[in-house]
Image (tube, rainbow, N blue to C red):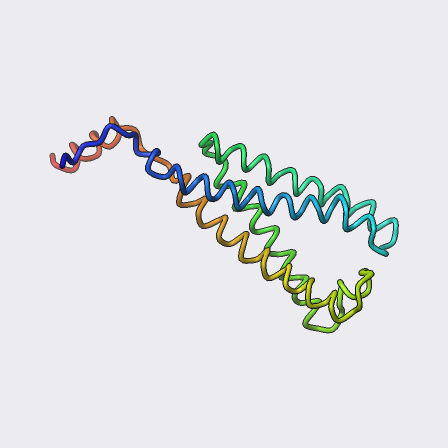
Length: 161
């Protein structure tokens, strides 16, 4: 078996980027669903909704921009997914903190019974936390910058001299 390969170095991470794109797209669909369907039907104040709905929809659309970047192997994708994951993790941490302190954000705004809405809301927050963590991990592994061959050769030649 030969040590040289005809595949470029980035091709070995194609499946990693594809899996990350799937996870980021899944998170984008969930966020878009929350922003377009759940929030407008909740019992929140109209002033809060006038801020939350556009921000949530924009956050969901940013996930699909990241999916495009992952599929097309763009270098800015790792930063964008990192920012999206950080924002998402902050929101889920805040939601979990509200739930743990007794200020239930799900029971008061849901048409479901309060206990069931709380359990489903906490489950969604935990699932989204895991989804963003795994998506960020596979994005950072799949969009690692590769050095051109001339830079690699120059670095080894300089080290040998």
